Image 1 (spheres, rainbow, N blue to C red):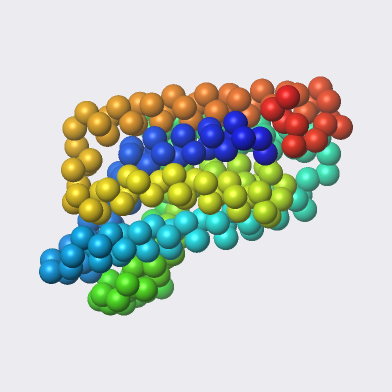
Image 2 (tube, rainbow, N blue to C red):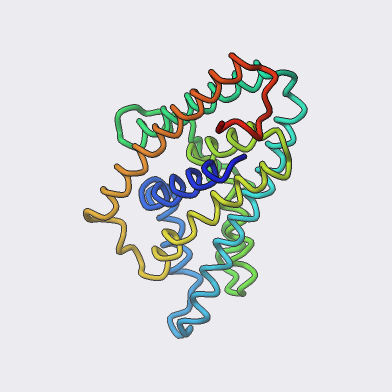
Length: 236
C-alpha cells in the first residue's frame, strides 16, 4: 500500500463520517450520550468517555481488517486474482458513492439490522446501564460489529492488501478518520445532524468514494496487463 492510498482512505472516511456515519450511528451516539453520560461530569470526563467509545470501534475495525487481510492473503494466487479483487472493490466503492448521494439503494440493501438479534439487544442493554468508563469502550467494540456498507468497502480494501498487517492498518486509518465526526456529535449533541455542513460533507464524500473506486479499477487494469507486478507498486 502506498501513502497516497492511505491518504485517500483517510480523506474518504473523514468526509463520509460526517455524512453516512452520522446518519447510520448518530442515533446510537445520542442514545448513549443521553443515558450513560452524567450531566455532572466535567468536560474532561465526558471527553474521555466519548474517546473510549471511539477507541472501542477502532479496535473492532482493526481486528476486522487483520482478518480480512489474512483472507485476502490465502485467497490470492496470481495478478489476475488481484485484478478481480480490485475490480470488485472498485465497483463496491462506486456503488457506495452513488448510494451516499441517494442515487441507488445499495447501502440500504446490504445494511441488515444486527440490532434486532437477541444477543445484541441483551448486550446493548447491559452496557447502556453501566456508567463506568470501560463500558464506553465495550459499547464502541459492540457497535463496531454493526453491519455497515461503508465499513464493508474498507473491509474489502483490507482484503485487497493480502496482508493481515496492512489490512489492520487500512481499517485502523479508517476508524481513526471517523473519530472527529462521532466524537463531535456526542460532545455537541447533534449539531451536525442538520444543516448545510452535513449536506456538503455527504456530497464531497460521495465524489471522493467514486473517484477512489475508479482509481482501484484502473489499478486492476494494470494487474491484468502485468500480472507479475507487486501490490506494493500498485500506484506506479
